[in-house]
Length: 393
Ligand SMILES: *[C@@H]1O[C@H](CO)[C@@H](O)[C@H](O)[C@H]1NC(C)=O
Ligand SMILES: *[C@@H]1O[C@H](CO)[C@@H](O)[C@H](O)[C@H]1NC(C)=O
Image (cartoon, rainbow, N blue to C red; front, side, top):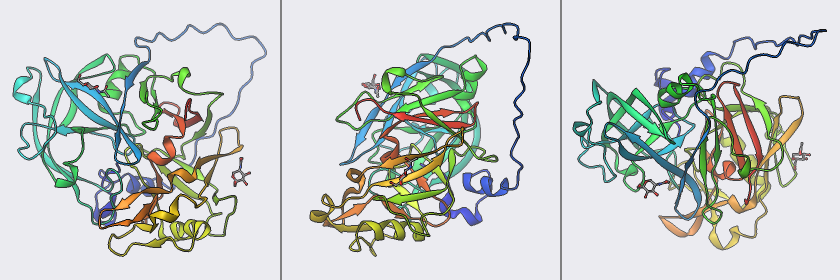
């Protein structure tokens, strides 16, 4: 889920990742100068790590497509179990509370936690994307929040006094979610993740977000799980000034092995584990669809979405190769296979199937439909992302 960019132009920078990127666009990239020593270096003492990596199992919220994963955290004393989406597109922790009378999810009761501290601040956040085949424009994903602090636990780790938000009201769009909240996992460590790094957890996490048929989806905090990928991961650096945003520069996109002037253009692509669909600018979306089928057309009933007759979709080749550049300067592709083209029938017309890219001007973003085909490493400390072939996918 990506916070706030619907009202990007009028939003304050603390809400919108994309604003931050623009504001920092002029920053000079740090230069690394390799140094060599003639003497063999003295053995450096291994930095003591207080915590070793831990795996958190994830469940797949299957809505006809495998595009949203969630797992458990605990909040409070004694601990109350809360399910959250681990969302690389946002940075804070918020979950349903007993203060929310309309939230159908499992709710946290702050009055039953001896360590809960009410922050007394109310605010609201709007997410631009939600779950499944929803359109992004006009969809109203708004949470009303009250600030607080409490002990938070995840994967067997725990930290006291973690800043969080209780959901006190939510728009009905959230009601179908089987999870109670969102744990932001942005590119700058915050909240529970920052606290665990202070306790000595290595500052990276990894995601194995598999289709339901494969199962065993998991988040690894503080490392990678080598049983879940093959080969050596390829790493690419976040552009300087990325702030909280997980994003990589891409020199171009190909569709079914072909490209066009519009597609073969440098762009920055955001990676968002909390978003199902792909969001590209209208120009990019149109150029990609033109290479798949002229019959994929915008659905005027749902702004930003595209569709084609469901009975045609499975025969269409739609391999989308997005090229990136590794830390060693070599190009590599992340590929969305043809099987992702359909995200299911529109509620308003079940014979019309929605296709995976929504037009959204102002940023370009990939979510579950790409991430489920790779083992992904989110290296907060190293300001880079890694990808390797995922086992079983
Ligand atoms: C979360 O906890 C509940 C209750 O203990 C359990 O049934 C469920 O399987 C857990 N979910 C995951 C993804 O581990
Ligand atoms: C990326 O995909 C394009 C289109 O299929 C292909 O031409 C190119 O060789 C691929 N690049 C790499 C590094 O595999």
